[in-house]
Image (cartoon, rainbow, N blue to C red; front, side, top):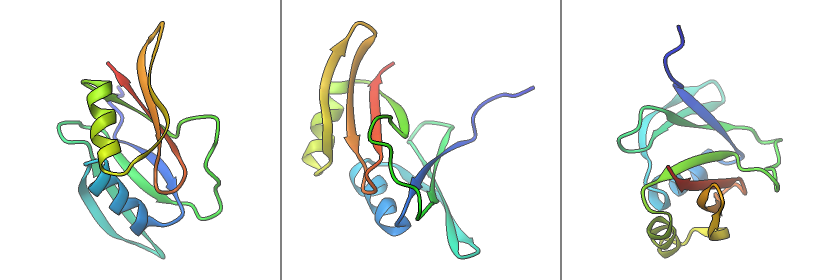
Length: 119
């Protein structure tokens, strides 16, 4: 039987730039970073989480402007928003309360939209 998600991928054009963004600004930790042919296999871990985020080299894929590439959970949306903004993260949607909960959306270094909400 299936048990959990091992990883999800985020398409990136520049793995070095994306790695710096996700580790320095977002706070993810490198789980593995190794050569894989002409690219690298970079798995990042959210501290305390089991699911990894893979920075998948996709030079020809344009980020979607209408749909998040990744959805994350934060303990406190407002506090997380303020921390990430202080680190220079660009937001397309500041914290907003909807009938289903509070969320915010930022752009990563590659133009992907990343949503986070309260659990």
